[in-house]
Image (cartoon, rainbow, N blue to C red; front, side, top):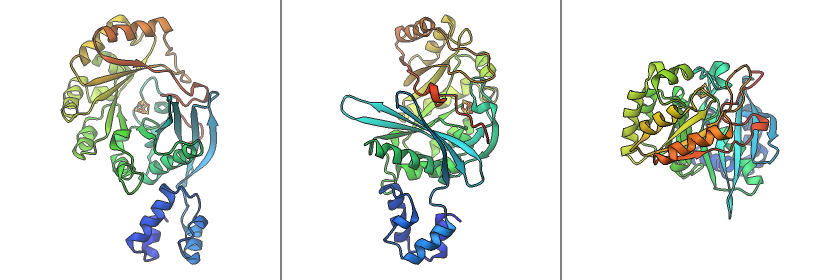
Amino acid sequence: MNLEKAAKTLGWKPFRLKQVWHARENELKTSWSELTNLPKTEREFLSEQVPFDSLSIVVSQTSEEGAAIKWLLKAQDGHLIETVLLIHSGDKKAWGTVCVSSQVGCPMRCAFCATGQMGLTRNLTSDEILDQFLIAKREAKSRGITGNLNVVFMGMGEPLLNLESVIPAIKVLIDPKRHGLSPSRVTVSTSGILPGLEKLRAEKLGIGLALSLHAPTDELRSKLMPANTAYPLAGLMAHLRKWEKEGVEILYEYILIEEVNDRIEDAEALAKLLKGRNAKVNLIPLNPVPNSALKRPSKNRMHRFLEIMEKAGIAVTLRHTKGDDIQAACGQLKTKNS
Ligand code: SF4
């Protein structure tokens, strides 16, 4: 039984449910027994009938430098997913980015991605998406980080293939009476599912958007990302203009792969594709993926790519990869037992 069903069974008035949400999401209580404003009989009923969290922590790993924490989480039906918290240290204060999964596995089969090798098992529920955030929020609080959290839908899965759970989860994240995140702190990343983009845009949530681009031409992109065959670049880029017109700066993620998409002509084609757009490019060195011959380029090749983009006047950063040692970096999430 989930909380909403239990609330009906117990005949709760709406304020009671709001109290429980507040205790879980803001006071960060971790068990029913801590909710002492509920009658004892109700706490006992809830302890027996409703798991406090929809996910339980199986393993928690911290990267050597402590800047990345990865959790292997188990759903009620035994399926496993992964969630990552990245800690960023600024001059004055630290902040965190929570990378949440939206599916168990992923059906998109991108060539450079460990999750894509798994295939899709099932969609996550909105409770399961929100509880990933909650687990990370508790950890962040234990490290003194409160209120400075971003959420990126860049974990396992293609979020736009699970909008029935992703949209309600985002609404709870940005609801001032629930988690209260500023919408600009939430970013959905997609491989480019055009109907999903239309649907998400229609919600007018004010959130950020990232496109996993990884190649500047249809020919190359279709080889790396089968999704491109169904939704080629021309249609996608035309659609993204609509987001830009609404003031959204699109983040383009580009994983650099040696001799595949890191050549001079690739950088020039990428610069041409993005010229004059409200775009920011995040270059990501490929992370090693098991059973794949794809390689991370040398530093020289990556810097050459970066320079070509900079000279063309494109806003671009080359990401320092956090959490490689615990396979928490982009494209590395893969559960061994699901
Ligand atoms: S990169 Fe994203 S969309 Fe592609 S297979 Fe991996 S999880 Fe799925």
